[in-house]
Length: 221
Image (cartoon, rainbow, N blue to C red):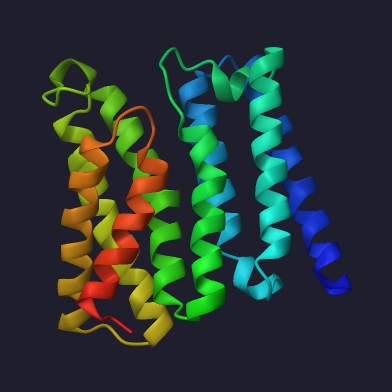
């Protein structure tokens, strides 16, 4: 890790702590359900991770950051803190897999240097997974999958992941083509199936992997 990595690393860590503190404050004062504060923290953290390539050349500072993220989540759970993240009333490993997923995607990016394969999976993780969760809660009485996930949540995931991937590809390549639209649709279908079948929050890891591998097969770069 180089000296120029220290400042962005510290700023990212500080921003993460501020985000957790803000979520906890909103949770306690506004009496918002933990599901919503947890999703908000998820969205903002993943969107912030989209800036990793702009600030870090090596994967090592991101590894340090994600280990720090993991320790905060694990220790706060053990100590009964951060109810805005943990008080969701269901068994989930998603919070633990989230930093692992972000680090894994950036690690691959440092070797492959293919923007599609970093930005698209992280964008889907940021937008589509929370969208599916929120819509799924509203459709709770219409669940049709054995693991309790709903048709509404899966449809929300499908639509938002298609939009997220298509917009990402259009921005990276400065073009909007039929090829990118087809690739985005295939990615959305595959990742929606993976999300629907992933138990206990494992979609935080499995969905970005599915997006990554599907894009590789589609040869969008």
